[in-house]
Image (cartoon, rainbow, N blue to C red; front, side, top):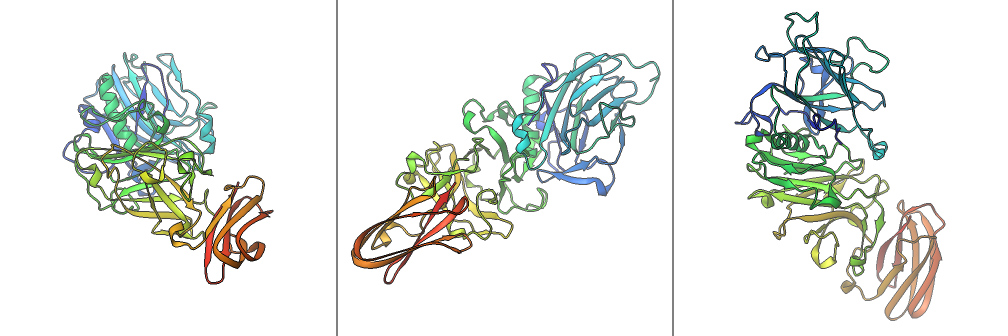
Length: 489
């Protein structure tokens, strides 16, 4: 998510990590006059995290930081701020600048200056934000073309930036939420420079930009026009030494499904992750904005996989990005019931990148495990192994565990998903025999039972009167057992 301020107040800046890199300029754009990173409150209690990087929890504190004396009134300025809003739908002060600079304040809804009689109100958050399980982070970029004269009582006061409001009003309340990074330039940056800084911040903190993502050389690493379908909830990992970026694991700050991808093995923080990647290597992903509804696409007609309608696109860039080994975690609680057998759940990677998920273009991977909290983990993943330039991926359920070639029978349950509770089980045996059909819920409670005898071909109708969810259909012959899943939406 981002805030649009006007043509002089574009998108904006965010949180800095504590990585120690050779080049010390955000996005590779030097000459910054102030650069606050991570927890700048000097109070360890206020330390928090945003996309696995340190941030300052501003709840209950007021912090003032003097601007460097080299700043002379900030007549022209470009200011980047990264802020994660509190869960309450109230206007909150993020910071205000006082002293010889005049007065300028940034809140979660506006930027304004009383002495300059200037106020810019942000666009309202998108309606989809009400679905978020956690507050979204935003990037604010503010450009000041001509500073207002100092206030009459400012005298020679030092310019200072103060976080939280010392005099709350009916319009604004004490600051809350996270502030992870503030960058001040005493100049008007060019559009290309702003794009480099915003891209650096967006990848580092999982914020979706409404523009192309670029590296420190200005090269496009994610094109919104080319990847329009998948330009939702964008996140990434990457290393760009000139940009001071070394993001080893990431998630989207606005995505409710909490998909996380990291180098080698996901850790508690970006700093703790011991993985390594090469300079200018990026992996960036976004989704199609759909829900976790299971369905069978036309291209999957011959597949035994029910895929989620929510799908992602992975875009690698850099000379060795395809060699990066990654781990992926996905919260399955919106898709699977508790204690669901991991053997049925899978990650589907469409190597063509088309998103059609035709079986011959796909690899299906079972998770290493699904935790008691419903977190499925996939390790040792490599992306774009065929060199096509991108992979599409999604998650789904295997409706059966064994391929038909391993079976002496044909066993099919249809329709799947079942829309009105009615289903049919079609069975073809190699010779006449008795069968038993049992329907269970995911807790293996018996829901329905059918028997047949003395035939080689069966068509058995039935009804599931239970709640919406996943059901297991088992077929028992004389000496074998087969299973399939059916979905009741």
